[in-house]
Image (cartoon, rainbow, N blue to C red):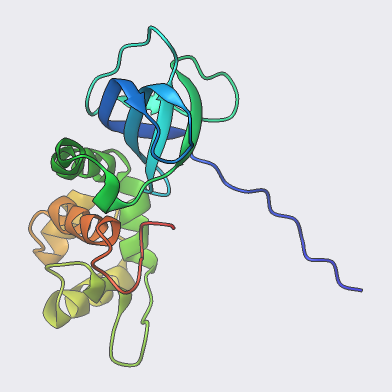
Length: 188
């Protein structure tokens, strides 16, 4: 009998505050109220509802620890949120917060560009990023064949792709809003 190897569920360690209500009611867990925070996870880029610890102060855009052990400002992660169910102020903060995540996790996103593969015979995963069409895709593939990209600046200098952070952020926002058929960054 073959045993399937056990892989523990991966939980977010950090999230960024998009909006919070000091006297809110949870939309994911009935009967839970308190400091209700709408946040976006740093790794999986999922929208989360978080319960803040009483008497804690939060700021929009703040990076908070939501991991399993040693939380100080967070009581619990209540659940996942859908884009349509977050406040309009949380939706408007999303762009800046996502850009911040893409900026501060450069290695992760440059690695994606260095390692992405064709999805079908006609479509390459790189083409799913707004601003990258066939011309940039070919240039990226040729350059990474010679030497992997080291940074966003390296990518800009060798391929001429202006503002890769903006393009990657746009793709993530499309995925969060449910506007894409396939997710490459946001995990459901």
